[in-house]
Image 1 (cartoon, helix red, strand yellow):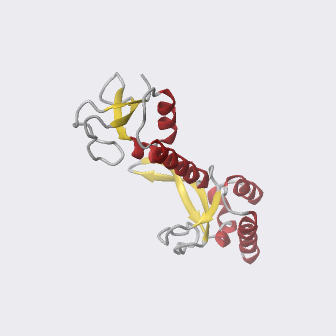
Image 2: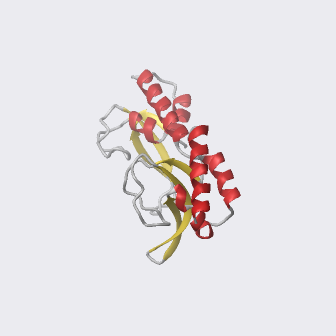
Image 3: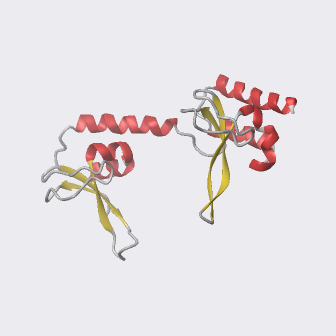
Length: 188
């Protein structure tokens, strides 16, 4: 059994996305998952609108298999389309350049905050959390990139190639960011 849409048999299950109860008789999406507590897979249930936002691929597949009528189908389709737009706005991988959504991130190079709505460069870095090494995202001001190339690995040419492949900025914005990176290298 894979992902499935069905009517809730009771009102006891809660949506794994919003944590609110799923009413008896309401359509819900069941996503089959393997847990650490059992050898057999179990179902995690979601309201259809919640799944449209957080699990669009799973919901699409289940909707294609569901033989019955889905109330508010137009709203679900609109939510799925919105989720696609949100996914398209996300970068494809590291490194990438984007606008800082908040002013909370600090530059790995200079330690100063990266102001909201300014350009930043996101790179993959190694973190140690609780004695375990893991990978995460670190941010740099464009002008701090060249001085920190040894910490992020690779050459400037490889970084620029990665930025061009992964960033979701306009061509003009990306050219400006690359010029700032190169200017930072000239200042160093």
